[in-house]
Amino acid sequence: MAKKRIVVKIGSSSLTNKYGGLSRAKLKEHAEAIAMLKQNNYEVILISSGAVSAGFSDLGYPARPVTVSGKQAAAAVGQGLLVQAYTDLFKSYQMVTAQLLITRDVFVNQEQYSNVYNTLTELLKRSVLPIINENDTVAIDELTFGDNDMLSALVSGLVSADFLIMLTDINGLYDVNPQINPQAKRYDFLPVINDQLIDQTKSESGSKFGTGGMKSKLLAAKTALSLGVNVFVGTGSGNEKLIEIVDGKGDGTYIGENQNHSLRKQKQWIAFHSPVSGQLVIDKGAEQAILKGGKSLLPAGIVAINGAFLAGEVVEISNGDTIIAKGLVNYSWNELAAIKGLGSEVAMKKTKRSKPEAIHRDQLVILKEVMA
Image (cartoon, rainbow, N blue to C red; front, side, top):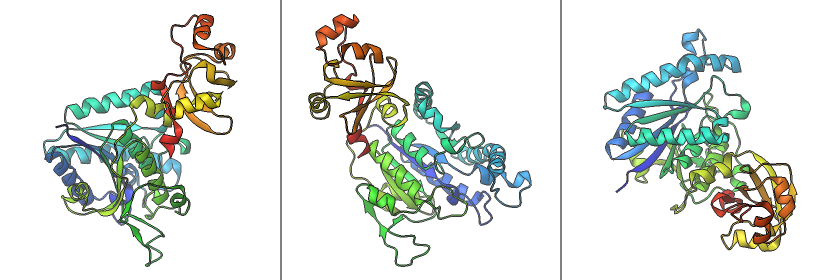
């Protein structure tokens, strides 16, 4: 039986002391809990914040810096210290660790995206614990993941994880902020994350040392669910806390029903990360064939082409009112302009191609299924 794969995300608030520095005691407890997961035959990937907290004091800052340059300098010092602390702790459990630093653009670049997947697959095959963090030393606002929340969701989907555990300093998701309103009600279980819940949740982090906040976690959880990964958001204590969470006894919110689907790596990239180079407008027949028939998109169903794109680029598919899908197109825009509305035999003869599909089903993602 294949090992179950768990992604554990630890936010800054779960790693720091009251001064904002790295808490060695908390780090040790997390390491013990992860080691216990591994000892119980789980594959584990760790997404860990904490580089800024680990490094600011060595730079002479009296407290955690607030400027971008100060945070990036602290991260440059602290990243090595953080991973060294983890390495030393896990070595006592005979566990080998590896470090991966990622920025948002890695997921946009298809080759780099595949390289991350291949690296993680090889590390897990060799029973190594990957420790992943955003590359805070170079990341800018447009590339950030929100205290690694979204990063943990995207990595979970990429590796087809069975479960994502997001550890924070608040024991789950509430209808209002529990730190302000003592009457706040916790959600013990949420089958889905809907837009109403996201809209009513404030973005601020509950901790002065964290950057994610509950809205960030809801958005990440929604993404993870769309990728076929169930989620836990909450807290815990002791070296058995992760085992307790996996067993359904965690102090927090469980999100998602039993998942029976997952997007292949290629389709994940198309759905969530790929740059869009153009748009194809299709007729009602093609829309029904794609949405209900599980078919590829043929030139006959295309009524209009927007944008200039090359074969092999990603385009949106629209019914005229709504974007319903995205896909990797087999023809350039000018080729499709010449064959749109034509039958497959005529289109192949005109373009001298051996395959009729404008977008093959294997390279097409229905956004209604993915983003719902």
